[in-house]
Image 1 (cartoon, one colour):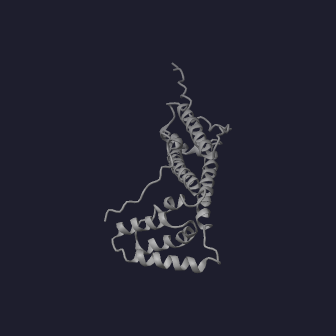
Image 2 (cartoon, helix red, strand yellow):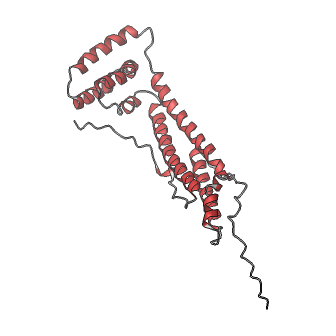
Image 3 (cartoon, one colour):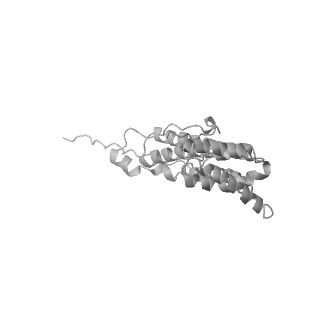
Length: 233
């Protein structure tokens, strides 16, 4: 007697990594990066959803991280680099406005005399919270031609006294043309970069471990409201 031959089931394998990727574009580097991250996350999720439930667990383990080399995933570093460059340029513009606000050689003697008077005043104040208030008052009441001196001297002076100085750029911004807008732009782009960097890290980590794509944060939800230093004593 013969028995029918039972053919073994054909083994299931992961679907091939998709090729090609359409750049979603964007009006700014941050918008383009976010759209790209969203598109990559969707492509990755769709690829994972196409896996058969019959794939051997060992085969899945061996294939973990395969999506990292897809055309879609390989676009992620480039769009993030563009955001980094944009944020660095914005910071550089604000920094240049402060650094460019310097005392001329012709006005050096008068500037030094002015600073020595203010330095003696500030040295006489021992309470750090009162020192910050006094420095703010010095900036607010200085003449326009004295602002370059304070831009040069106050950052190092406050650092030497170990008191918060995060307020100084904002205080100077109203006295240096264009600085307020440049600093707001720098703050906004730095915060957008932080959001997009977090998205990048969590998404690429998920692809490396072959786990579900994480929720992605929207950089358009951050703004440039400046943080303020507070002294608690």
